[in-house]
Image (tube, rainbow, N blue to C red; front, side):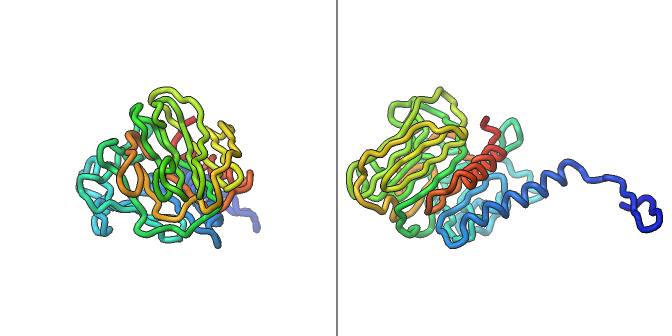
Length: 277
């Protein structure tokens, strides 16, 4: 508000709160991320944006309803913020993850590793190049997929996944397969591990990054592309196998290989959403 005015010079009192500034910064970050999807398929799930989540698969019951006192609601539908329409849903009531808040007040989806998972409503277009970024926390030593494209690449062609952990129980791993053999990149992580993991997957190379740092690289043959050609799922495969036990804070998937500047923007964005490191 203007407090005094001398001639043509207005002197203002700064009444802007830090919360208002944070909201403005968030809007700018969201606009930067939206640009990544211009002309490119993919998806963007944000567990901090409560308006994008519903308790039912049809999208009629929001997870947040003022005055209801609702605690730990199930999530049957998560809207895709990329504008590409790749929403994730779960029609089976008992197989829905639960929305919770951590000690920092940040929201996440809790997957139980028993029957919880969500899938896109339809298949994504085939892609030879994919960048995947997720925020997640490991909840057990059982093999579980945080994000899966098309199916389990151990036995399925044209598929990929980020696993936390892999079958060993102690590794963060990304698998990818085209028409040939599976390619895996991985590194060891401790129990209850919390991370922002990103994978850059192409027919030529797989790169796995952990909390912003390059974790592993492989150029082993995976055959010809595409490396994804079906539904995308979170918390397990699209058929409900290899189920994840842990916390899911969000994901961004782009059907291209991001440049270093773009990848840094997304990694910083996910870091702010998770406070993982």
